[in-house]
Length: 81
Image 1: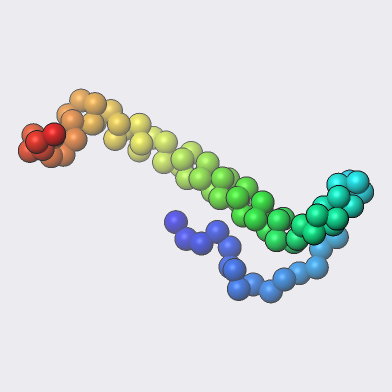
Image 2: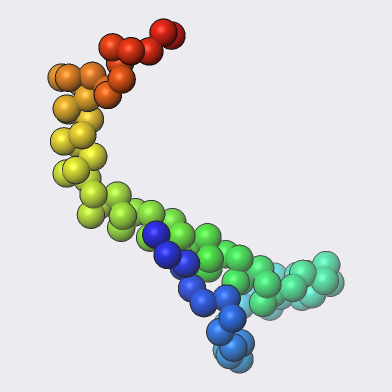
C-alpha cells in the first residue's frame, strides 16, 4: 500500500467550528491544534484504508484460510517445531 497522503503538500488554512470551552482549555494547555488534527485525520484515514483493503480482499482471505485448513501450510511437513 502506498502513502496515505503527500506529506510535502503545502498547508492550507481552514475554518473549523469547535466548542469554545474545549478550544480555550486546549489553548491554555498549549496543544497544537493543527498537529493534533493532522494526526487524528491520518489515523482515521489509515483505519478507513485498512477497512477498504479488507473488504476488497475478503474473498481471497477466506479462500486462503479454507485452503490452509484443508491442506495445511506450505512447509508443514518439513518443520521441526
